[in-house]
Length: 278
Image (cartoon, rainbow, N blue to C red; front, side):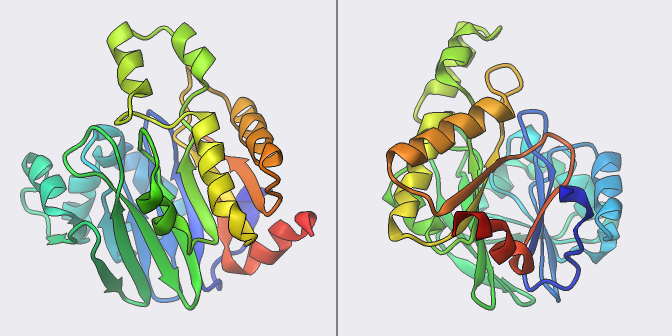
């Protein structure tokens, strides 16, 4: 089962704690560091989720923020303050979160820049979304890499280049286009989601993964930020796998993230997970 695997000794380990429009949080661990990417759920929820993953909140090395929207930042400030964990983002995102960060330790990481957090190399790249200065991240340890781009309305060569080093790609597959137009959202909300600064649909996510897969490298892909109203894990996986098949790409393993059930990946599991494709 995805939630029962021992990843404590892995060079690089990733756990999805929450994914979707109601909240997002991703835990990235090495032997010497633990980084929370976004914190868009209530404080007690993230505390319990971290403890279930074998980590006390005060053991976090940093909280990385992709952008300031509430489904990515809900309890980031309170968590940083309560446990003395530094919160890291670019200047525009920190400014947009300013009212939530009083008393928290903050560090700026400019878009496109890189830093070391213990033994994890962290780099960022710009993405297209309706926030102050949204970014994706790569985190690398000893040749292993996870790449994250969870809110973006379109992708381009910058995103492709940012994600290319990743062994695990965490990419948004927010909606099915047909279901979006039937969803019980106001018209202006549908237009926002569909826009180039909104959210990737399943086909666009599949095309991005197909582009990455042209190099033939074995990768795992997590489909993130699925809409409850305009998508489902089954539809997202079916469409993305169909796009990959049409493109002749067979080197990418695809899994849709559950909203709250933890899902794990590690460098030690990587070869086993992809053996089905050999």
